[in-house]
Structure formats: C-alpha cells, structure tokens
Length: 407
Image 1 (cartoon, helix red, strand yellow):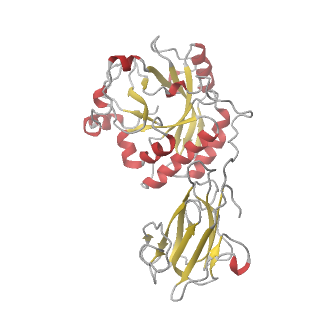
Image 2 (cartoon, helix red, strand yellow; image 1 turned 90 degrees about the vertical axis):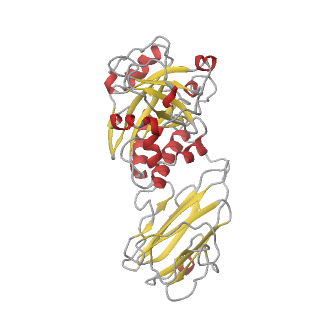
Image 3 (cartoon, rainbow, N blue to C red; image 1 turned 180 degrees about the vertical axis):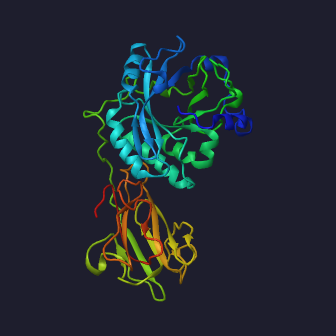
C-alpha cells in the first residue's frame, strides 16, 4: 500500500485506537492466516516473507485523481504467488475522492483485467484525495464495492482508522457488505513484527483483515492477518464462476416504482402532481420560466430522501423524508419565498430486490433544454451529484425510478 503521512498519525495511534474488540486466545489466533500485500515496490516475482504465509493481495493499478495508472508487476505477482501456494487477491488504488464518474471509468477499465479467481477479494484502497463531504465519499465507495460484487468478486474497503473516521461513514459500508468488509491498518511502531500487537488494534465494526505492520520483515513489507477467513473466498470451491467473466448478474426481483412530485411556484400555488414523466404539460413538475420555492416528492415503494439548494440561503437545506404539502417544515423541501436552484435525491431499494435508483433532470429559467441527467450512484456522466445550476432558478424537473436511464 501507499503510506501517506503515517509517521504523523502513528504517533497519535494510542489515542485513536484502543484495546477492546479483539482479545483472542492462543487457540483462536493459531487458526488465523497471515499474509502480505504487494505493489510495484516488491517487484515482479516477490517471495513469501515467511513459510507460514497463506495469502497475498497484489495491486492491479488504480485511479489517481482520474488518471489511471497500471501496475506492470500485477500479472506476474499473481501467477508467482499462486505457484508458491498463496491465495492471491487484488486491490486497486481508489483515489477518486467523491467523483463517481472517475470511479466508473476506473472500474470499467480494471475489472476485466482482474486475474484472481471469481469470489476472491478486490479491495479499494481509499487513503488519499477524499472530499470534505462524508456522504458523497461514502456513496462513491459503496458504488465501487457494488460494482465489484456485481462482477463476482468479494469487495473490501482498505484504509486506516483516523482517515476513515474523518472522511467516511464506514458503518454504511458494513451495513451493506457485511461484518468482514473492512481491511484496516494500524501499527504500534516501525519495528519488524511477524505477528500482530493487539494493543493498537483498530476497534471498528466489520474488520475482516487487520494490517498490523508495514515492516513485516527487514526492509519493509505490509503484514496482514485474516480475522474471519475472508481470504479463502474464491479458493474454497463455494463461489460459482459466471458463464461469462465480469458480467453483472441479471435483475431477478425488479419491482415497479412510481414517483409522484410537484413544485410550489414562488409567490403562487402548488402545481398539479406529476407521476414519473411523460410529455407535454404532464411530463414535468413546474412551468417554463417560473421560479419555485417548495418541492413535494414521494414513492410508492422503497424510500426516498430529497433536499434543495436555494439562492437566498446559498446552501443545501436539510434532507426531507416525508411528503406532506400541509407541512412546510418537514413535509416538503424548501422555504417559501426562497428560490430553488438545485435538487438532490437518493432512492433506497428494499433489501433483496433488484437495485434501482432515481434518474432525474432539470431546466432553469436562464436557458433552453434539459441539463444532464443525474443518477444516485453516478453511473450517468454529466450532472451526477445534483440537478440544476447554482444561481439560476430551477423551473422544471423530471424524475424516474428504475434500474436504467430512461431519459
């Protein structure tokens, strides 16, 4: 892994980490496997650090602020590791911040290049470039992990605890991907350590792999311990291989979702409700060249939250989860008399159903034609984060809930 300012945060590690969740017996510890992770710094043909090592995780490449950089050592590291009897896995540098368009480009490029077995780990290394928006950072990470899972691999999130707490809602990751989905680093010092020192274990829900040192041997090498058996994924005979590599699973339980919405004209009244979108006057909420100050929005299945940005306040107003035109405090988004210039929403698909999201687009009073389509997980390039242009009153809005873009 790339180590960023580790000398700075390792000094504060005693305050950030504490003993608690992992107090293992000798018997338990003896059943856990150890291994390494490799990048270009280990060369094309790295050898096991110790005979007892059982796995390694090799870097395929990654996105560095949108620039894709391959690791030319990846293919030979995987084949050489397998020849040594190691369970080989993959990781990607995920320096995309909260930019899901960059994330999509990266995964489109790298997932077909993964050489470890279906079911094996593909981890996202997220330790640099995060934005100040925790929600958007988390959403971008979850998007990437969903792509990995859909491609038939085991997704994991890699970082260290202080960085994660500052930039990511890791509980959302654990909630969706389970109690083995985190790979977290935490070192007591830079002395050579062949076994973990549990006194600085990063106590967090969902830690499946603990990277306990960057000096597993003299000269430097990351040492990891598998706490849950997750490194056996792809090597235990229990993960089926798709008939076509890297093909996402087909939808199997897709529900029809109707979205009903309406704008309140600034200085006027509520427009009629619109269901989904169509053509003509019934195809959108609002009216050409008229500003709006309130938004009403609901779905008949699943859940949705929404918020607006206003010119007068110069900020995003609180998220709204209800839909009640008579409750202008918490039943609709906006403030009467304050001009809406941005709209954002997130649809949550019920568990067990085919993943769907809100696709939406808008127009403003300043220009002709709809702006780019937005999508919950950033799979549509253009205005992915929200609809509108700050400073320009938003006059029309179209929304559709589906598993693909209908605009």
